[in-house]
Length: 112
Length: 111
Image 1: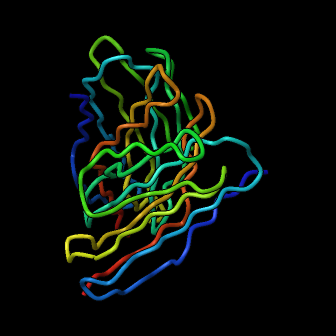
Image 2: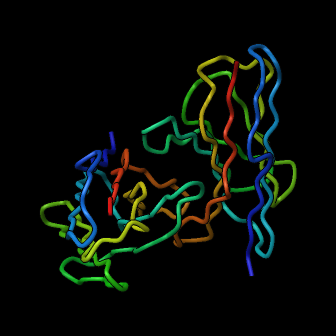
């Protein structure tokens, strides 16, 4: 059975802290790993990672994939209260018609 | 540009009543469509997906059903709601090997 495991499940930090969110996976026919941010309603896309060792960066957020050890991390530096959200990791498969498998998410709370 | 509409945003329904949630996509043809449910504090559970009109795959046996009467319309239904059907329902679409775009969700409370 395909599995995507995120840790920690929840995290509380102070503004300005740096956080690292983890996502490990055990799947067959892996194609890519995706990160989403969910505030109140719809998850919004952050990154898609297909190749090992290549960091993707957007502002204070960055992510990297390790296809040998089967995990990805999402880093957020200098956190702000607006970063408070659920961060979801998902795995996509070689067949574009196979649905993504999501982890349970990490709930991040950033306090002032 | 592509947009996805999902309604209603919130719904409070009594146990045993029927349900119909609708999702439509604009600006694309033959999208893959998905219904997910998110219980409080948990991840996304895939309920149904569709790769074409009239083609529905069910991931979890339950009292819900889905239909795709038109290319860009996806409907989630139930004949009789249970308390356990409460949750946040998300519709999404994808095209080819791209990621998903989600609707704004429906928060369903069964009382």
